[in-house]
Length: 370
Image (cartoon, rainbow, N blue to C red):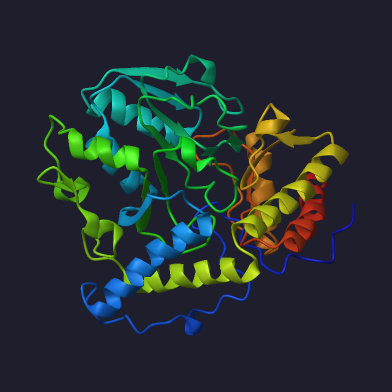
């Protein structure tokens, strides 16, 4: 085919850090907190607003707490694993790179009893093996595999253990049954296109009860401590972070939250993400040389869309370079440890019109290599 004439207005399709919201302008951020202490009234107010506005936009159940913690989603996950795991067996479900990192932490770093349930890229593990008496760890959406859970029906309404969910590429893009989740972690550099460095930790009352009733047997670094003298450090969830945050990143996050609110909230964000996925689904259906890495159509991620092609590894690298050289698509290669292919971010900050414009370019690039 001939070279397409229409390019995406925004070629940024990276799966993290993700594209900034449409119309983003750093000069329009509220920078009144810069140069001020995060412990000052203005600093703490901004951090607390980030927590309360997150809870509001996500429609969290009564009693759920939102806190800002160090080190992105990774920091939030490791903080809760080190703080809460130990008193019960753990069922850990992993099917992509980051889920396997939590498996490594649980089996090699922490002295706990773990049942490992794994699956290869493109598949999900057998959730029927979950034990309601156990704690549970799983990834809602496999950012590096493009495979998400279908639903949370496999989690018992009478789950005795706590359920810990890494949802970094799902929050604000997928409809989540919050009442079945006791701990949810995410980073605002994913779906909301915020700047990195910070993680968000959401706790249910049940998770708080665990933290206040259990003392881990291993040394606890300050950066992981969620309790003091047997009580939750409430300040973490009221704008008093454990360590000094970037107030510029906080301003950026508040801008993203305000934008989500302005477009109609979480429901509209989810709708826009699915609209972009639908464009790719139609393209895949029309071309037999490309397919989703997810083997079950019901598990195809609507954020980190992973695709496999009928090209060898060198040809795929050439295709990715060709699209980048044309300034059509940047950072769309598969994750380093995932099968070779494409990974196109379709979170809410990516315009569906840009996904539509990208598809013919992928076909043109592929045709030029075969």
